[in-house]
Amino acid sequence: PSIQPCCAMSSIVLPPAKLGKAASSDEQLEFVSLFPDVVRDLSTDPEYDDIPEALKWFSRVLQYNVRGGKMNRGLAVGMSYKLLAEPSTITPGTIRQAHILGWCIELLQSYFLVADDIIDNSPLRRGRPAWHVKDNRGLAAFNDAILLEAGIYKILKKHFQNEPYYTRILELFHSVTLKTSLGQTLDLQSNPGGKPQLDQFTMDRYNAIVRYKTGFYSFYLPVALAMYMAGISDSDHVRVAGITDAELHRQARTILLEMGSFFQVQDDYLDCFGDASVTGKVGTDIGEGKCTWLAVVALQRASPAQRALMEQHYGSSSDKSVEVVTTLYKELGLPATYRSYEESTYALIRMHVQQISRGLNHKVFFKFLDKIHLRSV
Ligand code: GPP
Ligand code: MG
Ligand code: MG
Ligand code: MG
Image 1 (spheres, rainbow, N blue to C red):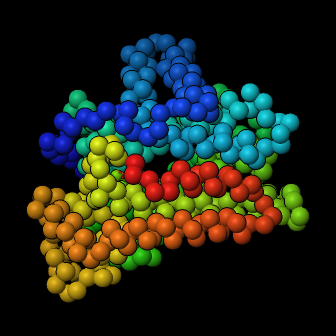
Image 2: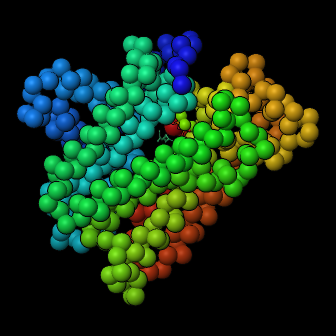
């Protein structure tokens, strides 16, 4: 796709300090303090000392794109590892390894976001110009996305190649990347050529999109990595009371994918009704004609006249069309429906965690869930 010159929005720059919580806890400080090592591993490699300009650019790409987010995914690896591993195996060294895996997820996330912002024509990310907009970088930003992805495998090799679980985590990164891009494929198939296919905007289709594009990499990946580090290997090995490692992974995946869908519904709601000075991004879903939770619920409720308004305005990025659709969402009562969805889904996921009687420590799930409940960012 060609990149349209990005509207007035590209000049909006918000203070990054407003994004997420400050690194206050020891855990966050510990995690953040490892980032310079990750940058150093990637940008000062003697293997490439014949091309210092490229390494210098790589360092710049990392500094701009990997930092500035909430780091929920990255932090979740260490947090989960401490809850899941045999206490005698938890050392400063293994905690550091868990945090390095956390940074690999943050690299994966930055790779997806650079690509996603090109795809979604989004001008702002984390309160700053999206990378493709910054300094008119345009589609050259796509190469930087590839750099970010390649960085993951270099870090994994350097720090994990001698670990018994190296192949498992490598394959997990590969399979999660495939699942995410298949989710992104479904997301893009909702509006081929920029024309939204409203008759395909069903809740079933929506659920498939968000399960794949968000759930695996944002929720299952961090916990699964911690499980592998803790020796829970996705095999037929029987661990507790007849439960196999494979069963524990299935259990975690089921709950974490539910959480992922919950998170993406929130993301869709905030795209339209969130405060850009808090979310650090400006909504583009209506203009881009995305199959979102709001659009699906609106179409379920719309009268024929309201559906005609959706047909006419959804997928058009003019201020007028975005306003017509936003007003329609309000008339259909979507903000109130969202609030009740958020409460009931939160309660439902909690209940599903509590129903796990034999298996993983419930705190792994609750810590994650409580971070996203009632979020505005
Ligand atoms: C969220 O969609 C999904 C992603 C960021 C995954 C992207 C995956 C790729 C393979 C590129 P979104 O567009 O709603 O996210 P946001 O609101 O943050 O732009
Ligand atoms: Mg997208
Ligand atoms: Mg997007
Ligand atoms: Mg979004």
